[in-house]
Image 1 (cartoon, rainbow, N blue to C red):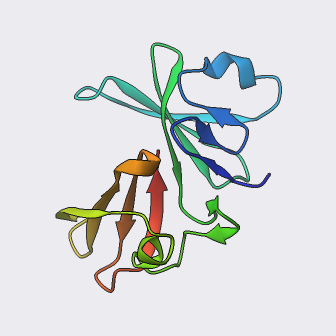
Image 2 (cartoon, helix red, strand yellow; image 1 turned 90 degrees about the vertical axis):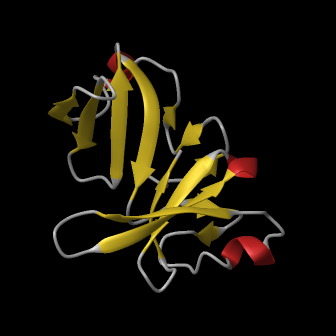
Length: 129
């Protein structure tokens, strides 16, 4: 499966606001944790890069960590400055510890409806729509 970013719509075969149950017959999901703060349940897909966040059976967010294609470019492992080349504005939001040892930076790309998380060298490590 190619993880092609369709801004504000979805990534790959998954669409925002669609019921996850629509995909049960196609994919082997691994249901993970429920977040009491967001009220989202996390779903992983066996053998895939996609992580789905679901609320009340609907996909509310999609995350990629290895492959996310936009305009024929894999955003993962690209510099955050790729958006300058694409003439798209982005803004730094915050720097967060993702565990006890690793910090990442969070950027918003509002014109595409996504967040990019980078390492401290500004290389994109995940994309969330």
